Amino acid sequence: MDAYKELDATHAEIKSMRTAKAYRGKGVAVKIMEHILSVAAERNYQRLSLETGPQEFFTPARKLYERFGFEYCGPFGDYVEDPYSVFMTKSLVD
Image 1: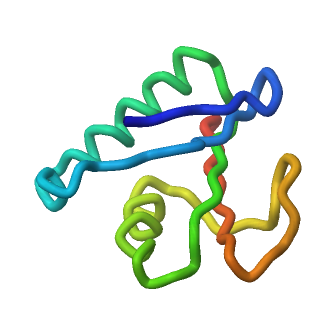
Image 2: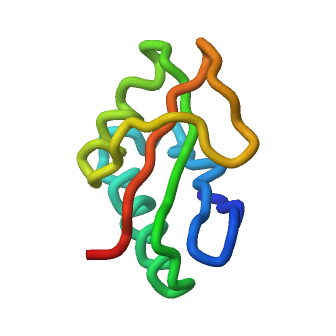
């Protein structure tokens, strides 16, 4: 499952990305991320951003985002800095 929030015509936020427990470690998250990036390209977004948690539970997700070129950044949109959030972003233009 995945969901987006359009922040403006060129920037969207990945709002949700989940892999059912039974499918974890089987490449499903990679396929979901490939789909997310494909849809973002179709919508002509220039940047994708996301907010996730700093807890150990979210380490696999952060590693996946890093693998796809997401970099750590400050808050975006309506977010503010807080100890329970990690922000990441990826430019989609060359």
